[in-house]
Image 1 (spheres, one colour):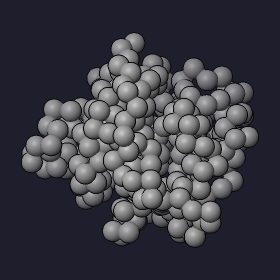
Image 2 (cartoon, one colour):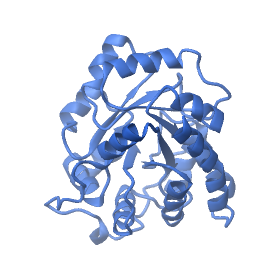
Image 3 (spheres, one colour):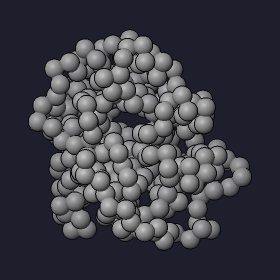
Image 4 (cartoon, helix red, strand yellow):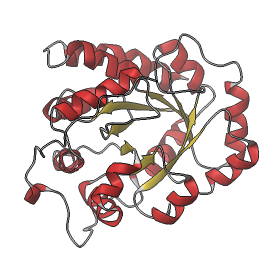
Length: 296
């Protein structure tokens, strides 16, 4: 596996006093919850969800702040924001390099939370899910992180490298920050049944073995695996890792409750950076995928 090079500690791009932290959570979450609301509405409409992933701060937080509305305009129902980390074990080279670019631009966890807070003040109402590893959360302080994420307006958390048993104890699933759980193709059925009891919001099924990244075709066992998972939990099931075109998205949407597209977005960000062509290119890429998902 190719790893991002380790970088010196980045200076925060937002001052400490701008961190969205206080001793009291002031009801920043809608009631009922944004993620729950979305899937309930889509179920009534017989539609599926499109989850769009990008690394926060790639190439910088100002560009991320422009990309998120563009992704929503193109049809994304949920935005998954990757918090950059220097050793992203579950990510392929495309997302690893996205993390590296974000860290080099000075992106920090407090900066990402401040961005979310600003998006909420600008009337961004779609669910926002944080995609991260446990090290940044641990370094920030678990209780402080949970309070800050909720107050900023985050709706869900996917911790890629924390065992679910520890996550359920350290960050229990009953709070306002929904606990998204990963299930892999190699996870034994008994383990799947146990994992989903620690989840809330939705369950993220990894379409293939290995790390994130685009792929030419989907596994032949995908339908069988998703069908079992949907029997094991009443939560929505979203499928990701490798989906990069409308045909794949439509196939997955016919099986699951949601489709996750990530590396293909990050790859386009890598190629275009801060170019004025970035937003039109991202919109043009994602719109037909969104149409395929919503029509499935």
